[in-house]
Structures are given as structure tokens and as C-alpha cells.
Length: 153
Image (cartoon, rainbow, N blue to C red; front, side, top):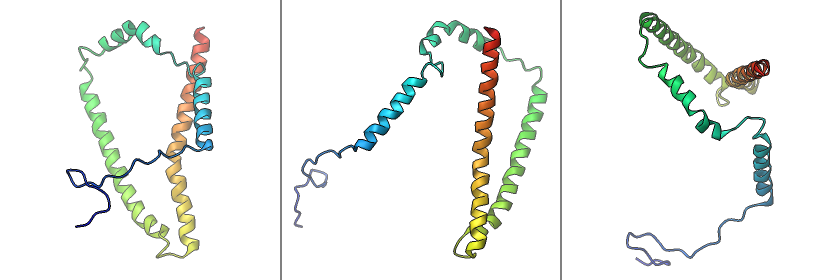
């Protein structure tokens, strides 16, 4: 067998060293912008890693509250856990029953454009709804915690 490049012991062809890929100016500007935004938001986000060391005693105290566990309401917790599993089972079944016809309606190779385009937009909205609810709830929690912090000062 004739090979243009010499081979290593395990048969991999040796190649000449190539230059590393160049980083574009746009990528450098984007990285600089991201790092600048992170640096500017450090104080507003209240990132204080040294507080973890300073307040380690509080974390230990909080952790001790879980031991020994209080199993007084264990029966109620078990019932609620079973209800949660039942809800997830029904959600899965309903999702499959919805997904099959909607998936067929959204496929461009078996439906005309005036059918699959609106169905695809509907599916996009459904997919984004979960993230929108998460953003709204996190924002609401952040506003509530900011209000509580102001009241405590």
C-alpha cells in the first residue's frame, strides 16, 4: 500500500503542523461584550463568593434541621407523591395522543403549506410557553425577594 504521509505505530497518518484557526474580530468583540456585561452585573446580581465561607455556620445550621428527619407526615407525603406520579402518567398519555396527529399535520411532505405552517407555529408557541412561564415565575420571585430585602433593611 502506498501512502503519501508517513504513519504512526497505530496506522494514523502524520500530518504537518497547521496554523490554529484565526479568531475573527467579531468573535473577539462578542467575547469582550459578554465579559463586560458579566463584570458590570457582578454587583447587581449580588455575587459574593466569600459569603459562602463567612456564613458556612448558617449553612451547617440549616442542614442540621433536616436530621434526624421528621417522618410524622410520611403518609401524606407518600399520598402526594403517588398523585404526582398519576398526574405525570396522564400528562404523558395526553402528550402522545396530541403529538401523533399534530406531528402528522406539521409534516410538509403529507400536508399542504396552509395546513402545516399554522400547525408548526402552534407547536412553536406551545414549546415556548414553558420557557415563558419559567421566566415569568423567576422574575416574580426576584421581585418578591427584592421587596423583602428592602423591607428588612
